Length: 484
Image (cartoon, rainbow, N blue to C red):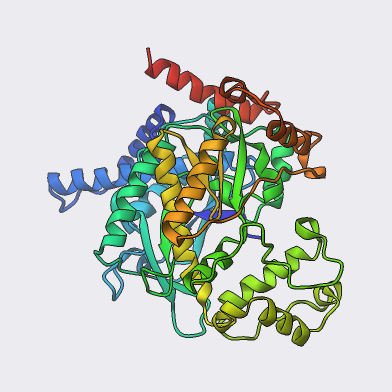
């Protein structure tokens, strides 16, 4: 697996340490700078561009160094000039000047601050990581929380499509100026402005953090990767539209109970089979709240705890998204269900007769648009109460004392958009990945005994981790200084 992340996927951090380091890099660039045939204005513009790139690449290296597991990741940088020039659609693939990027890389390498695996200039990728003095400086600074500026409105909404029919490669399209894009940008700017005021971390030890990072679907856990974007699909502003960008979204569900907000415990509440309920609602069919939509009539069904439920869920969601009609479960999964593919399809058609005409039609993206509208309403309602909620598509994480408010917001939002009632789940995690923390017991106790809001808020995590402890403490120091 590639251990690098592309440099334009990182945010620029404004840190005193990086400002000091940047001045040294700028001096190194000046040593090799030719002023021949350049006006003073041209030189000033070049230095300004170079400083932007210097601060960004140093930010990339700092974040990459502290991506869990610490010190194991690199930053990748396209080295072909074509990656920095406008395409036929008028869009810039990379919003940094090519010559500045090359000058900064040369200066960092000359200072021996980076280890560099050079790519070619045609279609190569250069990979860099901190070394020497830069590692010493990062270690001395430690993993610190730093304030971020909310991303600009124009960067908050993306519209994508397949490169061509049947292709898995996605291309970015120009986002139309419409009510959906304008309202999404305004909402996300407001949401991100609230989000960047908080510290989102994990209440685990350094060793446990390493285990978690090694099992995530992405290449790392970057605690500075916070701000959300809304991404629409298939060239349509009414398909997809879910929110992406927060590091917690790629975390396996068994680890999410360890997420903390400002050093306090959190809880997760999720909609039950939300996209299927949405599609029933579009057909005018009312689904009872208590109905298990993954119960298709298999013998000896054990309800939500049935081990076959996960397989049914995967298959049903595939039917809603696979337009080719070629999707098949693995033989072992069919064996676990005790039926053939044809028998499984018959059961699906019988149990979901009102929406069977939507199977293999790509209806999943239409349902995703509606569930993203619901999610936006939930987040808006919570923001109106000045409460931060972290979305994971059809579920939400909130600080423990705000669970009741979140449940109310989720019921109200679904009713307002889908015009129906819905079912909501809260499940604690209990497994070997809980690292000895009795999460299931804790969750059960919190749900079945009355505790005050103050008691819920006081469920502060005793951070057993040097990294996470340092991260949360730095956030508290920043807020203490700011509020003096």
